[in-house]
Structure formats: structure tokens, C-alpha cells
Image 1 (cartoon, rainbow, N blue to C red):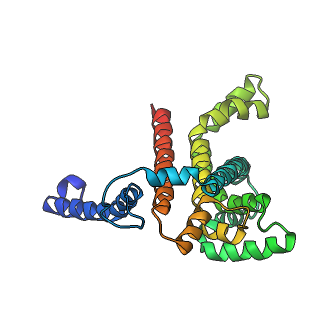
Image 2 (image 1 turned 60 degrees about the vertical axis):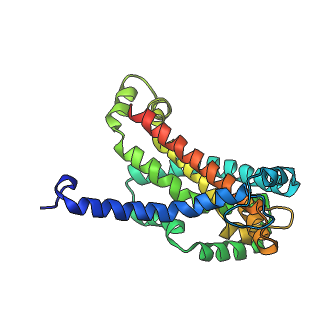
Image 3 (image 1 turned 135 degrees about the vertical axis):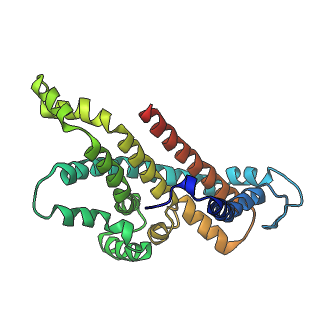
Length: 266
């Protein structure tokens, strides 16, 4: 019989200590990066000699950084719409479909999440180079959608599998068409899965750097690619500002996901 948490006794404090040390190990680099973004030094020096907002001002006054933010946002929004829409249709087929090869299709959809990203990046780059899509907005959106699609299918499929189809059948019996029942009954009932799919799809596109490096061009660079380029050229605290903004934005998105999940359960 497995021991419950209350029965662990002294071992419980050992586990809490290990958990605390792991959390500190993961959080400290993030805190250091945020502190560096406010440092007055010309280089990435810790601890900062003094605090300043100079590097944030330099970041937002540089049109190259602003262009990369707009590029990442634009691609992220398009990827969110496309991956959520495709994920919804694929989830209906995988959860409710009864056809041969369904499990193989499910595995195929989840393959980009399992394969090393660099393998996907090289394959996408070689294929898009032949199609003339390398370095284009369309190529970026398609490549990021391939990576984001598994993260959209998983939450939508889980929400759809937990939905009681008898409610949808009752709506059809009461006079609603199958499509109307899905739009007015099923989709609102699985909105938590849709919200999760949208948030994760956007974050996957927003934070992606490996595929983006292969797909980028001198005139089209996402924020992570711009950060990578800046790291190779110089190590000014502006890169810490970009990293901090990515951290804050990702944290805000995760808090939004937690809030939506909490409102769903209430």
C-alpha cells in the first residue's frame, strides 16, 4: 500500500527541502536576468552597480526590437487561430471518429512534440526552400503551426472526451441541428480546452527559436531570433530587457490560463 503524504513523517520535510532547492535552482537565473535588465553597467554584470531604466528606454527606442516584437505577435496570433481551428477539427475526428488508423493519425499529430526541434527545423527549412517559403511570413506561420498543433490537440481532445454527448443528443432531439448543437452546446462546454489550446499555441510560437532561426531573413525576425543575433554581436543589458519582457509576458499568459481554468471550475 502506498504511503500517503500525511504518513511520510520526517521524510516529508526531506521532500519539501528537495522541492524547495529545485525551485530555487530554477527561479534564481530568472531573477538574476530581471535584475540585470535594471543594471547601470554597460555589460551584463551582477550584482548591478545601481538601478536604472536606461536599457528599457533603449529597447523601446530601437526600431529593430519593436519590429521583432510586432513580427512575433503577428505570427503568434495567426498560429493561434490556425492551430486551434485545426486542432478542434482533428480532436473531433480523433475522439468521436471510428475509422481504421485513428491511433496512427493521433501519433502522427503528436510527432512534432516528440521529435527534437532541430530535426523538424532542418526538414522544414529544406522543404520550404524548394517552395520559396523560407524567410516569409507564410512560411513562419506554417512552421510554427506544425509545432503548436500537438499542444492544441491535447487539451481540446481531453475536454471533448470528458464532455457528455448525451447533452448534445438532447439538444438535437429538441430540434437543434447537429451543427447548431455543436456550436451552441459542445463548444461552450469545452471552452476551457479551447482557451488552453489558444494560450499554449501562442506561447509555442512566441518562444520558438530553433525553427525561427532557420526560417528568419534579414527583414523578418521574431523576438527570440533577434535576441540570438544580439547575443552573438554584443552582451549589452538590452538582451536582459528582452529576456525579462519574455518572462513577464509568459508569466502573464500562464496566470491567464490559471484564471480561466479557475472560473471554469467555479
